[in-house]
Image (cartoon, rainbow, N blue to C red):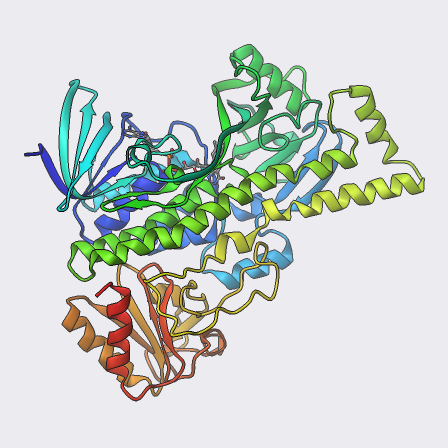
Length: 585
Ligand SMILES: Cc1cc2nc3c(=O)[nH]c(=O)nc-3n(C[C@H](O)[C@H](O)[C@H](O)COP(=O)(O)OP(=O)(O)OC[C@H]3O[C@@H](n4cnc5c(N)ncnc54)[C@H](O)[C@@H]3O)c2cc1C
């Protein structure tokens, strides 16, 4: 007999674990989360928070979304991505990033009701964790996961209570390993991985110093510094990252992974900070310093029966593209509603198989993208003659040469320009963030073919209601046209939603009857003139890709589960077939 029992046990209170707990508690599912430490993230690792993640926070409630914006640096301060000799030294170039280029900004505005922002992990984690605990999550800190065994009915997990030194056993129906890049849960289940850990050496130096005079006129979260040694290890180049504008900073600097990790003491941290800022007299208030390694590894399967992994436990990669915490929270959004549906008896455990099928390809994609982004600094170094050495004189000569009135210098300037612009695949990859489409048993396409991407799928989000894609966002209105709502706001909150138009009344009736039959509530919205929700702009008619009498069935995670282009001969039977298949019946 275990000491404690719960429905879902989650190991880890990082972005993955805390968001899973918050989503489960919001759905009324009993869950417990454990963390080996006494508190949450103590360094501001993740920060770039993309629109898809903000949609998850918005789904958790307006107060959660509002609190995130309150603590975040806004998008307007994020985008003058600078490449320079040092903050005080010569600027080599810059690119508008994170949706701040006017063209990109338009795409962001049209894609989501939310805004990208810079929210350090030290704010994101407490927000998610607090939301979880306020809504019912049982949290046990200073509790270290040791091992688990699973059987046909559940999982028994043994943890160490680090305050008493005693072991405690927890019985749950399912176990979620959100225990980070060295996941013991993944190791215990021997889940399959591809790739390699420790492909580069990196150090973080977190400090306070007022650097406004170097940066306030070119606000950005990232300042890339090209100095001798900047291409060794690390994340592609020396980085001075804004944590709080403009007096708290995180430097990321590389070291040769073939050598032992350096001891980053106060003297070394100050030296590196002075060098990258370009001020030999800079005084810093050092907060912390540590070394870490760049990983290039992803799980190819995220589940073993009643045990799941998510977040960094499943995808281990450098911070390039800012995808780690974002993808972790999005993993949670995918799994939480499925666990809730199974716990509530609405779905069979077969539904859970779709988690790995849907999220393992994303793990592979983002790990590959992030590592590729490191390599894509190469052409900038190349254009400046900085590859393969730390010959300061050679670098200086190359920097000088680019200013000449010669054809070679013009070619060099063009090469620098192009190499910097190409970094949009790291700093403005809206498609990577928003284009996730699923193909699994939890989606019914009825043979409809996936629409091909018209533009570069890594750079541009392409909305579609093809089953498996995220529901497109457009603004719709109440019938007076005075209050606008995102189509995403009509959906989610742990429930399936049906969207239809005038002539689709039979779908609404079918959804109501089916909900009763299956013991779940299906929200239904009929959009059209003189209805509760109207489409004054016609944006919904253009985005929905169905006729007024057709319907879209939307999963709780905003992904289209099934669609009918028009009214069918037997809407109740068709909707029933689709929903039952999705729920694994
Ligand atoms: C410098 C830097 C910058 C970054 N920038 C970004 C960014 O801009 N955007 C972004 O999205 N991501 C970024 N990341 C990545 C991001 O920090 C991670 O992807 C994210 O923290 C992963 O969340 P997680 O919940 O999966 O794991 P973690 O945050 O690692 O959390 C793991 C949790 O499990 C707990 N745990 C581990 N083992 C045990 C055990 N045995 N028993 C009990 N508890 C255990 C830990 O204490 C912790 O609570 C960055 C990372 C770094 C280093």
